[in-house]
Image 1 (cartoon, rainbow, N blue to C red):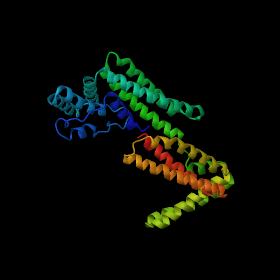
Image 2 (tube, rainbow, N blue to C red):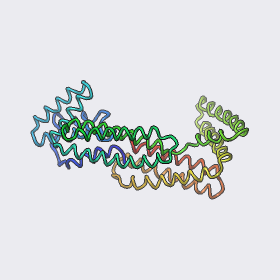
Image 3 (cartoon, one colour):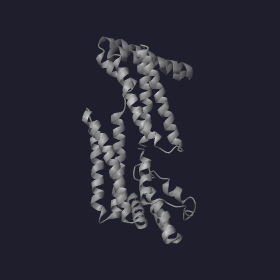
Image 4 (cartoon, rainbow, N blue to C red):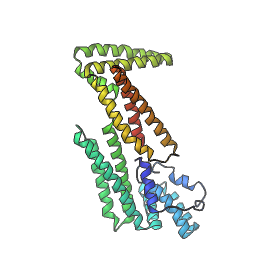
Length: 326
């Protein structure tokens, strides 16, 4: 799930906002509240909840009460971040009650449980899972701290939940990095490590091709640079297949196919209207086209082309996975 959706789930779980009056203190107030980096990109967005709470304060207590909160918040923007978060958390609890903290906690816990299961699957087969394990542990510790505070100190618990969600975001990034596909260059480097004397010739050819790319770049010859880059890529794919075997491309195509199967239902479940979702779908289809062409090449006995196309598809899917956690 894309992290931005987590804050949306929490807001919707708290209340379904009816059509509201204009935001207090001017129509730009909502933009002012959500313009900063904490506006939903990091999991639970306390800033998003505060914006919803400000609407609720206006509806329940009147415009003057909401303006007073907003002015206090604006005055605190130049102070320490802790002060700003305290005002936001206090307003959320004031508007929605302690139940808002309970519901926010439930959503973050649910998301962490899901990410934790995925992390454990990766850790079971990972050769080096230190970063992933550290991210998993940090998220769990932050959530536990929020749970301790929830009964007696709901405002502080809400701030702790923000920290838990921040750690959850880092866990998702670590998970994406742990599950990423090998690049063509990485496969080539692996082949160099196994290639013995053949690796010396491969390095010499790589140096010649790399120099050709640099000359084309220096001359500003875009067509020549593209041709030179393609030649360098073909060299790397050829050597990788020569040393690592044709199964390298076949295995990468199979992994890409599994990645497509995982991502397609996720994108299908998202709102059709979002521009980001449309771009993500185009990326998914681009990866699928590369994968299909790679399968055709493998069937036709063109193992080098198949590996090259598989690596292209893998690169697109990796970028799509990274977009999903931003």
